[in-house]
Length: 449
Ligand SMILES: Cc1ncc(COP(=O)(O)O)c(C=O)c1O
Image 1 (cartoon, rainbow, N blue to C red):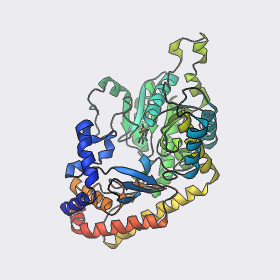
Image 2 (cartoon, helix red, strand yellow; image 1 turned 90 degrees about the vertical axis):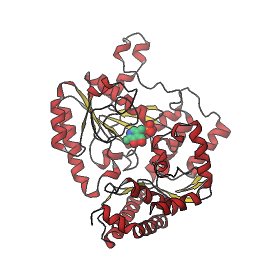
Image 3 (cartoon, rainbow, N blue to C red; image 1 turned 90 degrees about the horizontal axis):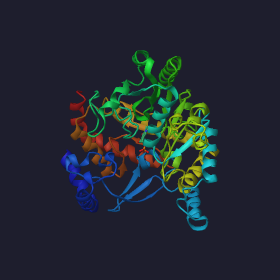
Image 4 (tube, protein in one colour; image 1 turned 120 degrees about the vertical axis):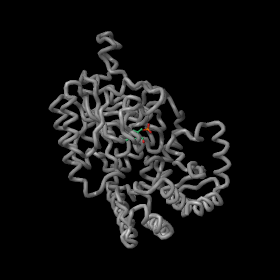
């Protein structure tokens, strides 16, 4: 019963409850990122407030410990506070000096070289401060380079609240505006396709080819199955070929997949090269960052030098990258240290995949044993027991029960870091086993079993 789970949740988290009540008075929804409510208030709960993190564990203000499967919006691939990153940041703070210079520095060059060495399709790069900025810039750059306007994205695709791409994100997928205040005119230039459906995607590409600047895709790790690998390779390749045939660009949004699926991200994993790629999350090593990279010929369009030398008109340059905090030394250093570790220890990716497999197969075993038809999605370091068929109340009960068992994962998909151990995975599986035993009857009704 939801009410039992809620009662226990409230008993465990009185301080979070108090803080959230106060936050609601001064911050709309009590959050600075909408997803962080996790819809918990809809059932009378509230988001838990965190006070500390180490490795793959976090502690809330009520001293409850959790195995963290959210790991900083998937950014903390090495877990929270990896020692080499912390040391380098401490050195910057205490002996080098300055959290933010706003002046070019060698650290941005070193991080740029790391990315370029890891992702063959990235020949040049520009840093910014978030993934949202990166996708906004990529859209502008694709339009500037091709001289065309339409961008294709996937239904449900998330690229931040960048108004150029904030369309067809939430269900129901329709041409209606996703947000008050967002100019509906933009929607004319965005078309959406079901990711993975080659026939439909190619149809939309052909229908819009005269004015098609490109297509932007994020491969949603928690929405596909390991079995879909080859199909996804074929899809991305076919789409790239078709885009190329119409002088349009493939933009790979690697904000989540970059440096997570493999050192070269989704592009290496699915054997396709983007013309442009966007980054965030892992690239900042726990600090804030964004980046757009790609083929030199395209990236050169953002070069301000010819305009500054009065050889070019302003309208012949793609203007991107005005961030005060772009390439700040803290983000660059944390990113460099993280990239060094990921490059040096390729076994990290094997471990991530192995842990991912352990958790996915563990979940399948639990569901099979109870005869529950819950499909487990996810690839590499992600997992997702797909609860789409459940009503919202049952989903929330599952989430509350997970939190009550010391597992921080919502909806209830999750991601792994390199420091999640077998024991952490086991804790999650034990929690899920107890959840499905408790909820067996309502699950069977929801799944029509
Ligand atoms: C695929 C993808 N693109 C872009 C973004 C936006 O990045 P940020 O939150 O850094 O602005 C996100 C954020 O979750 C994302 O998942």
